[in-house]
Amino acid sequence: MRESTRESKPVSMPASAPVLTPASLQTIDPAFLKEMRKPLHHDELVEKNIAHAKQLIAQSNTTDIIIIQTINAIDELTRIANTLAKRLREWYGYYLPELSRRVEDHELFIKTLLQKSREEYLAEKGITQSMGAAFATADIETMHAFAREINDLYFERERLLAYLETVLKSAAPNMYALVGAMIGAKLLEKAGSLRQLAFLPASTIQLLGAEKALFRHLRNRKIRPPKHGYILSHSYVISTKDKGKAARVLAAKISICAKVDYFKGEYVADKIKEELGI
Amino acid sequence: MKITPFKTFKGIHKMEKGRDILILTRNLTPGIRVYGEDLFKDEDIEYRTWDPTRSKLGAALKKDISQIGIKEGDYVLYLGASTGTTVSHVSDLVGKDGLVFALDFAPRVLRDLVFVAEERKNIAPLLADANRPETYANLISEVDVVFMDIAQKNQAEIFIKNCRLFLKQGGFGLLALKARSVDVTRYPKDIYKEIRAALEKDITVVDYRELDPFEKDHAFYVCKKK
Image 1 (tube, each protein chain N blue to C red):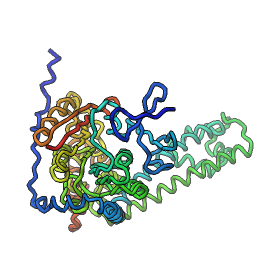
Image 2: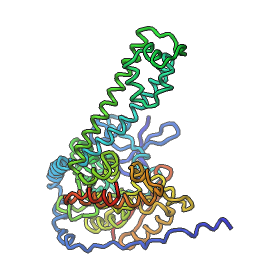
Image 3: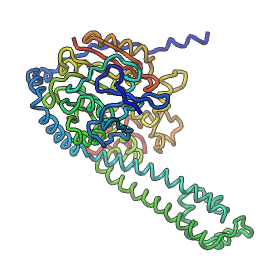
Image 4: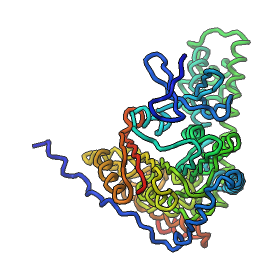
């Protein structure tokens, strides 16, 4: 009898009849619309609307867009820097395999590589026999130049992160204080704007960034729903044993902060952090 | 390379290329591409290929739709214009005496559309929410065709609202419906049926096509205002 799982089909929504109630709609004048249809207004309609659209587009730039572009740039920069760092590891591994083995962190790996020569490093670690092959000076210099470029990317990433922090701190001080720049900006990016984030229910904020898992669950109710999205990386959630519960509580608090920030209320993040015990 | 009229559609042409049949419209601005489409010349007339995988109207034509109701000189209200892929072909069809009111809600995509509008002189870009017609009613006119391609939960409602307000009597309403934005969890076929019933309360549904394989879970309705 395992076939009969179709019963959990969601309740069908009634095909809603369109409503035309708002009083503002009554002000639309059919005679005006008919008049504008005449060919003599053709060019006027085009020119007026192009000018109008240009004006509105120019006005649409907001702090939200700056935050979204910055966080996306950080994400992409991290991805690219890590890809290149992996390549460098592979490459440098033929020259000094012992370093890659000992230093897991990409950034630290590159910094060490640039600071110490092979001989210095091997002497420091007391390694007498290296598996590294003999490289000509030009070969080593090429790797070092490549490493410097990747190091610059990591530096740029730090710079963007610092910038993001200042922007978010002034745009959404409560959110920033509660979840920090990375999570705050990611939530804002996913919601689309601070306004949209402020209007989201806490349960949605809890799952922002877990869309794939959520929709997998919605299509097949046998698969359990996700408990957290981006907010999983917050220390409050990650350090609590019952992560689902912690995520729910934190999401509710983030929701409050987003609302306060959007409506420019008083600073409440300290009180909220106290309530959470962080 | 031989370019011939596409069925009975005025202004739409076709060309055989290998096994495939390409749909073409006459380029209103010769030499200019809008979205990287191929251009073909036949007897000094330039045509643009209409990519059915990127345009739902193009897909509907490929699926043998019987009528799209867009003629030369028509005024079209296009809701959900985006960057202007389909809009540019509609603009080709209506010609320089026609007009396309191309509406979209997102400033980012309308930015690209404004560039197209400036070249073509028959597109009026509007940055507005299709769900609030009162905000753009003073910027447009009565139209001969309403086309809608908006991924919103209440797409049918928005469509009917706009048809009521702006479509002339006997004018055509074209709706590209995305079942997944009405409800992801339900079967698209059920949604198509339900939407059809909702539409038929107000307007006559003349033709209907599912857009597979060009667009997954999309249906296309051709309606006529009573």
